[in-house]
Length: 224
Image (tube, rainbow, N blue to C red; front, side):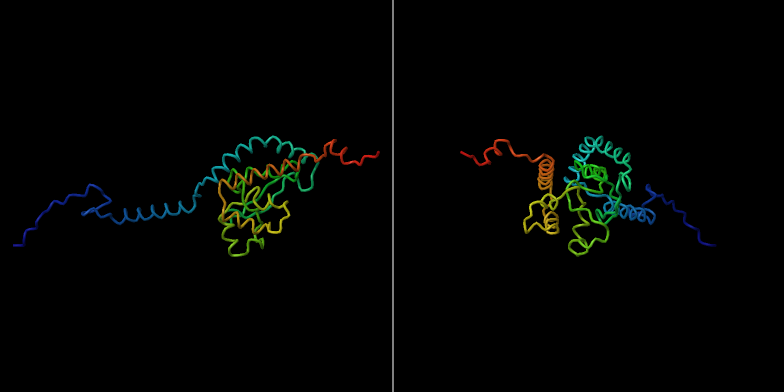
């Protein structure tokens, strides 16, 4: 007689994704690996929010709301005058991580409205309030290996250390050295100091330089 087969009742595991010993099955392990890789990719793609970026968002949004009416009126005036090329200028610039974007600004330097018209780039994250000057793709100033590294790690700015020190005419105020110095020491405190100096220099340039009447009178020689 043939031997009788022994019937055993095997229980299915409570979790279909695991087997005995709580080891994950192949589909579950594959899904876990995909999840881990997706999280690592998200960490690379998602920018880290820093205190400088929070300052750009807060102050940039306020400035954008305050200057938007003046920028709109200036754009209408330039359009009515039929300015060559139009009211807006579009130029390619290299930003964070070498990403190229179209920098959009008004074709006027009156009251620094060209800078204020770039504030939407600050809110979007293309620019920062303070940073190195935005360069065109392939600019030789970014060709040096060291400069290429820190320029890709920083957002270009509306203003910067090189811009506020350009009028001092000091021998060590080379723009490239100043941009590199900013890249090594940038922070919220330095950004606020640069912004204060930019506002002060703009007001100083806008106010008319007139000598007091008393000073002109005292400067004239007296004839007796």
